[in-house]
Image 1 (spheres, helix red, strand yellow):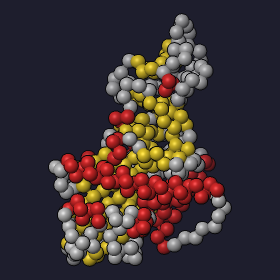
Image 2 (spheres, rainbow, N blue to C red; image 1 turned 180 degrees about the vertical axis):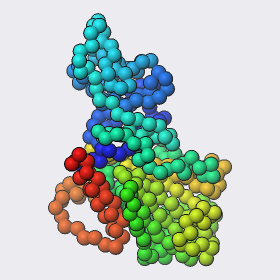
Image 3 (cartoon, rainbow, N blue to C red; image 1 turned 90 degrees about the horizontal axis):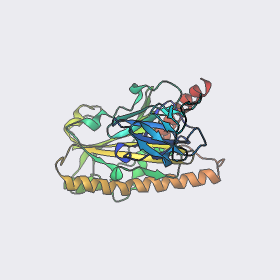
Image 4 (spheres, one colour; image 1 turned 120 degrees about the vertical axis):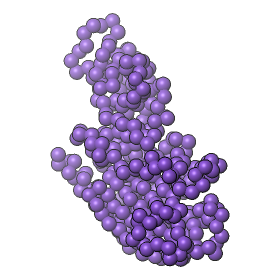
Length: 346
């Protein structure tokens, strides 16, 4: 099932240019295009005449024209022109979807409920002038042949980094440290404090640290409905901070990953992501390196999730167990199940 009354990333704004752009979201074929005024619009990807996908048509100054018989639609989905015909038949329209541009993404609302901008994820840090951002995968999503909720599970259980990301994110000595979790009306937080531990290998290379340079580290995932995860990792000299000093962490080395999964079908989705950091902000070579390194890291995650999907489809009733680190993913699953039940009852 899909949660419809939520914002999803439909595309990077840079993906939608002078031609209609097709993408399936929550099982619905959608066409995105840029209007003559420079804003963006989203319609269901079909002409109401004979169901040709409008993504096979043409963008014009005042609308989107079907590539079969030439019907033209405006950004609201209304048919505004039929060649050789003055009268527009009643019901000559297609569904439109609320679409907003924020932080370089086009966010779409697929539900019947009111599109509430306050329900966009709290990713204002992407506009923080103290951080430099690296847009992932050349501003194209990574396709994932798996259900979107597996991405939430993966990012709320960062214990997997010690096994999935060997040699990059698997700093020794912290895999057995406990996690804390909490739930809010909009999401779930997972937090792990790692005192006096070795640096993460990939960041040791970025920062020129050596393996014996011990420090206090933290990792935190804030996952918001429906699939918007913000990961915080950071480093401070051992003993410089108390674990609860969230504000104090801003004074030390920080790295943030903004990751969201947009459902395509029940068994496929798209990953959109951005990284941001507060160190070496003018080092463009490092920014390019971060993009390439984390494309590999996320590829490892995707391989795991796609493997789970294959088994889930073949053995949907296979028994599984839960362990301690499953607390945050299970809490997020329960929260989404509650919201899906509320939508279904509406």
